[in-house]
Image: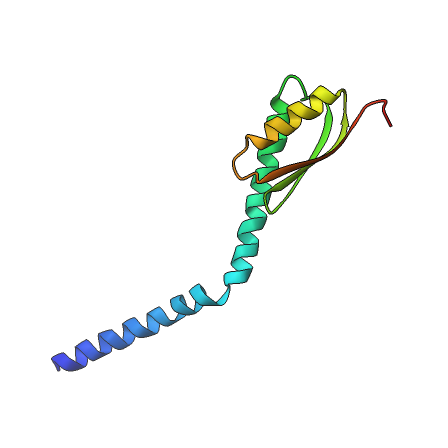
Amino acid sequence: MRHATIIAGLLSLSLAAAPIVGCASGGGAKTARVNQTLDDATVQTRVKTAILNDPQVGGDQIDVTSVNGVVTLSGVIKSADHEKRAVDLARKIGGVKDVKTSLKVQGSF
């Protein structure tokens, strides 16, 4: 009787573990894409917040995107100094691997 109880317990344990093992190995690539999307959204939000809260460049029209940790700044700024400041702010944010800019100085285009 005792052996039957042990065997039943082991069988229950193995059946319960099967779906966990399947989940852990099945969606790796999809999970990585979801995590990267969340990371990019977080990086994008943090960079945009840093720019908006900065007294020097906060009033400029700067758009921020992030793909795989590479941040792109675009829009219209008031001076070349503002571009440098925005890039510096973006580089200080954790998760930013590189910063690209297509910012245009107001009145120069």
